[in-house]
Length: 112
Image 1 (cartoon, rainbow, N blue to C red):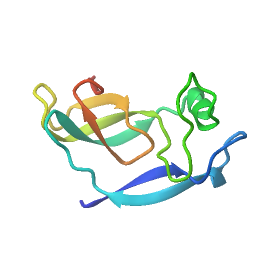
Image 2 (tube, rainbow, N blue to C red; image 1 turned 135 degrees about the horizontal axis):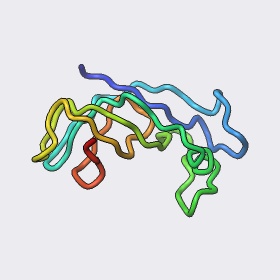
Image 3 (tube, one colour; image 1 turned 90 degrees about the vertical axis):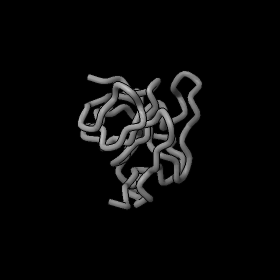
Image 4 (spheres, rainbow, N blue to C red; image 1 turned 90 degrees about the horizontal axis):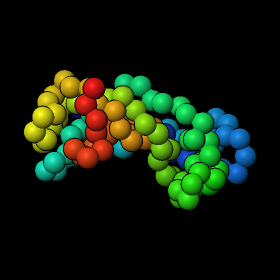
């Protein structure tokens, strides 16, 4: 598999988000380095805080602009690992963003 996808902001969002505020984008499959894992995102947490972040109103976090990945936590299954204690097939949760595959490190991925 050489391609993944992301859901990105189509522009800066000022009001309640609607479908036209997002764009589906194909990207190269991420590569991992030392201390990182590659995980296939299975479920996204669509929490209310994401709407606040998208409108630039969440505890000082930067508002995503055009082409930026939509933030969010996800449940993912490891498909490649360079981290001791996190093996291929394990499930983790972490800040994956709205994407099909995410690179996480041992500090940001919590095994479940």
